[in-house]
Image (tube, rainbow, N blue to C red; front, side, top):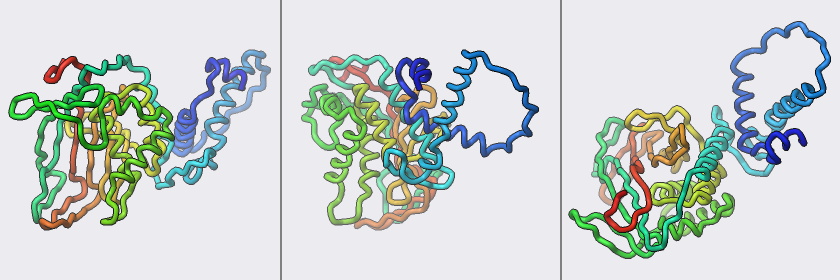
Length: 331
């Protein structure tokens, strides 16, 4: 342990790194049978060589030693991880830990209270459902681009209406202005508790049972897509998402333009997969996508509409975000 601390300059590998190493080790072990043992050549290691060999052996032990205790079921910290066949929690923890580290490492200058946070977002969806509509993976998506400017102190928001900039008071929940985001907890567990409370407060009371973790996942997505996050809070969001049960990651996902993305997802109501999309190279947040994983028929006062497996319910791509001096300014 002393050698490890010296190599890591006083810091041991994170839990996410342990999990990722375990997952990689198990994957390689399952991929091919072990080769026949080679003849053993016996020799004495120099003292320095022995110490390095011991570090390597210890690293493997750390990576593999607690596999039985943590794969599916409760971890050593008491956290429950899903034991879905073919899905490991380790890649999720690793990907989101990398995203958190990348967020904290990016250059950032906090806006002044009198400055404005500009966000440009592209929304794609099949549009308002009509009675008898059947939406499939091939249904054309309607596209619109939204541009908003929110004053950093959270008092005003500006939008484009009929070609003119219209300024109005900030309304609605969850709030995504910089002042609100800056005040969020930096501790992932505390942040998750806060967002779960928001999910309970915003969910329906009597109409039907609400999956508050799914609502929490959606709130995290909304914070990331609609605001400019302080690095500490953005990192806390990624690590809080990793604490939600039943979160998975698809490393081979692509967006609608065919570009590779990392899709971190959570299923709501058993049929709709909510995805948080990350750049696979930089781990920067790209947007969100909701896609049906099985056929679903929605019933409401205006009739019924059916969504088929594979159909996109909504795709939101963040095109630009930054700090400007006045509403209407984009650079």
